Image 1 (cartoon, rainbow, N blue to C red):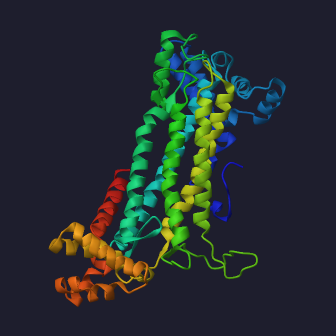
Image 2 (cartoon, helix red, strand yellow; image 1 turned 60 degrees about the vertical axis):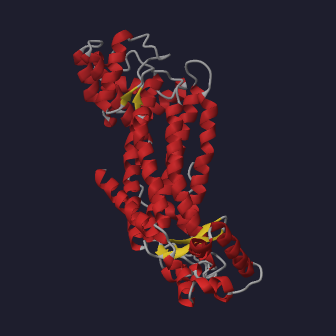
Image 3 (cartoon, rainbow, N blue to C red; image 1 turned 180 degrees about the vertical axis):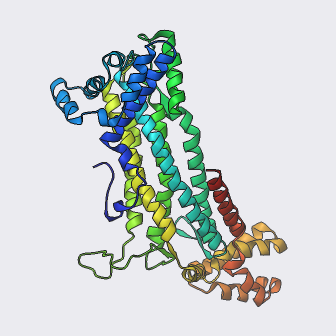
Length: 450
C-alpha cells in the first residue's frame, strides 16, 4: 500500500489512478516507440515504410498481455517481453526496426514522465478548484474577526479571510513552481545505453529532439540515465503543494475542537465516527490529509540517497524512482481530493470566532492601545505602561478594560468610550480584509489564465 486510504478515498480522482495502471503504462510505451520510429524515419535512420508500420500497429489492442507475462517468467526482464510481443504485432519489415538503437530506460523513463505530465494537468485542475473555494472563503470572511495566534497563544486580531489569504498565496507559489519545473522534469531521453548516442550517432540527438517535439516534452541536454534530480524536484514540488493543504487541515483539526469551535468539516448525515461513542463526529478529511502529507515528506530523502548511485546507470535506481514517483503521486492525490472537498464544504462559525476574539476582553488589542498611548508619551514609556496593565490581567486575573479605565495616566488620555473602541478586536485587524480580497482576486485571475 503506497497511500493511506480510508472512507474518503472514494472521492473522484479525475482519472489519475487510471493513468497509473499497467494498461496506461504499456500504452505510453507504445506511444513513445511510435514517436521514436517516426523521428528516426524523418532523419533517414530507418526506412519510412517501417516507421509507418510501427506507428500503425502501436495500439494497445495489439498487445497480448498474457504472452508478455509468460515471456517475462522465462527471461526475467520487465521490458523485453513487451518488445517481443510488439514486434510480432508489426509486419516483418516494421518489426526489424522496433526499439532501434535505444535502451529500455529510454522508453520507460520517457513514457513514465509523459504519463506524469498528464497527471500534472489533472492535479492542476484540482488546484484551480481549490483556489476558487478559497477565494470564496476569503471574500466571504474578509471582515470576519477572530483571534490571531502566535506560539499557540492569542496575539493581535485577524480576520478569517486574511488567514485564508495565506493558503491562497502559498498555493499560487506551488502552482508556479510546478509549471516552472515542467521544462526540467518532463524530458525525453533517447541516448542509448550510457547516454552518449553510441548506436545512433549525431542523428540520434536530432531524433531525441524530434521525439520531444512530437510528445510535447523537453529534450535532455545530456541524455544520461544517471540523472534524477529532476524527479526529486517533482516529488519535492508535490510535497510543498501538499504542505499547504496539511497546514489548512491542521488548523481545521484543532480549531474545530469543542473548546475552540471556530470551524468544522461539513457533515453528511448517517456518517459514523466511532463504534462505541455514538456522538462522535470526526475530522475525516483533515486526518487523511495530515497522514498522507506526512508520508509524502518522508520519501524525499530516499531519492537523494539513490540519486548518487555510481556510474552511468543502475537498475536499483530505476526501480526506486519509478516507485517513488508513483507513491508521491498517489499520496498527493489522497491529499488533494480531500483538500478540494474540505475547502468547498468547511463550516465557518463567525459568532464563535468573534466570541474567542473577545475572550480576553480586549487584551488582544494591547498593541493598538500601546500605539495610541505612544502618540502621547513615546513608544518605550507606552510599552512599559501597557505591559504593566497587561500583566495585571494575565497574572492577577483582572479585567483588562477595567484596568485601563482605572489607570490615572490612561484616564487622562482617553474617555471610557475611546477605551472601549481601542479594545474592540474589530477595530484592529490592520490590512487583513484588504489582503483577503486582493488574494481572492489573484486566485481568480490565475484560474482564468489556466
